[in-house]
Amino acid sequence: MILLRKILFPFAILYGLITSIRNYLYDKGILKSYSFDIPIIAVGNLSVGGTGKTPQIEYLIRLLSPTYKVATLSRGYKRKSEGFVLADAHANAALLGDEPFQYYKKFPEIQVAVDVDRKNGIEQLLSQSSKPEVILLDDAYQHRKVKAGFYILLTAYDDLFCDDFMLPTGNLRESRSGAKRANMIIVTKCPSNISELAQEEIRTKLMRFLVPRNDNTKVVFFSFVDYDDTVYNDNESLHVDKLKSKEKVLLAGIAKPKPFFEYLQSGDDELMKFPDHHHFTESDILTIKSQAVDKIIVTTEKDFVRLDAEILKKQLFYLPIKSKFVNEQAVFDKTILNYVGTCSRNR
Image 1: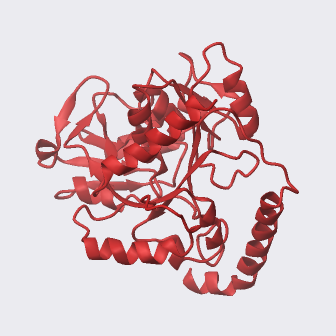
Image 2: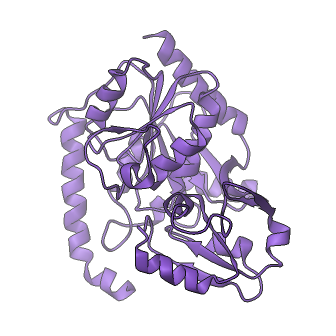
């Protein structure tokens, strides 16, 4: 695989050139970007998959929804519908995609919408009788047709964008210089005990890609994945300590499942890996059931929303996760709340 990526290096150069020209045309106004009179926060990355966008969006929902009417807008990756869809009582993972459906189930007080065309999606949200006061754009860093008011760029601790290269040789969707559009960077999936020295070394590497600021505002933050100590389904819960003593099947269809498996695995547990955002077929379900006779099945939240209608609910559980900041959480919260508050007052 590594050799193949090296062989494809000329295509990475070509791909980088194409994305750079596209960004140049947007930067110079030759291709039009649209702004809206509402606070819009875009969360995304420069690399493909696995940076923790979903828990970061959920963090923002928890931060903002007590004060503001919040809406999320995603493209709805691998959904079976088309165009603009606003989640309602008939929504499911096939209609919205797994991540938006997860938002809808966990946060019924917010609006959850999907649309590949983010401009149209925002216009549709703003045409509703109950208009949102803040819109969170999920995985929209490269969607230049809309100009968000605030950009949060995510990069994983073990796969920093500054150490990566363009597709297909590396994992970058666009050049590292694209980081200059970010208002802040969050280094995700850090060890919870990462040292101040290690943070400063990473911060120094990342800061050279950002536009210099005239103030002392923090622009690089560090977060980690906090796993719940309990697994759940629609009817009951089970503490992880008790779960580890049971024979079980651990199932994941996410980009980087290793930490999930390591957190729960014990003894001779069966591990079942599927591609990210995998749509489970009838054959998949039969295979899972055959592996899980008289066993508990534990999966991720994203997989649970695609599987809970397919497998006996007494047998299937999910493990919730949250994004937590290593430090400076209050500074992050204040920065976001100040942006939204200022933008709202100036409307």
